[in-house]
Image 1: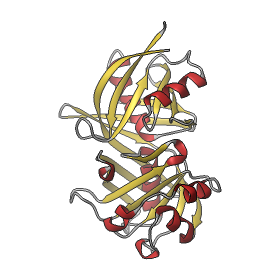
Image 2: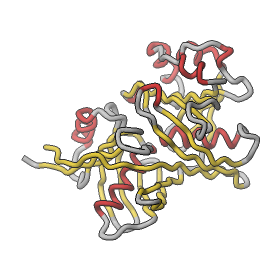
Image 3: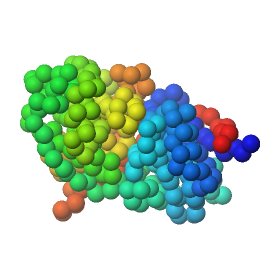
Length: 293
């Protein structure tokens, strides 16, 4: 029976058993699409990454949820880069490029007091449709007064479209409870399948934003730390001058409501007509083993 090695890491985690879990499979170039999807179903994390090939400066990567392949996802990108740097390369590097279906994602690795801080440069954001409140209120089971009406409900994409929903406070964010019937009716009519709700009130004073991310379409009801969606949020915050500035450098908390607190670092700035987005976080190794295929 053939086996394939894998590693488990926690991404956007300050310590073990925080942030978003990821399984990284090595030497996956011979796996079929069906085999990768079945492995992702078996692991049942938000995403699983499969390394197709590695050279000194480029890694080809495919990413699967328990339901389907996705063109890009944030925590699989950072977690996979960490494993490439720690395990696969003969010497550690500071820069790795990941080739995913959405494009090329540059990763920068900074060593800080014995831990690795990883940054990914996300693709240029595209700002898609804005939406009226009525449908999202039904989906999230919230009231009109919970919305921060100064800013739009908008679909944004840096590779994986996400609906950004601005709320006033933690009370509004804690109220969110997905109505699955209304949710699927909504997302089946638009590009974005993820709903990313946020507010400026936080549990920890060292953070500037609290978020929750809902994605039943991909087989994950709520994620504890979502790199791609927070990249979309970073672009949104800059475009709409949420902090009255054309650049941000903030820390985001996510996942406390589901018992897995994660921390993401967002840097973004308007550069003439474009917005440059970097999402950072720490990665903690958890386990390694072999999978029968």
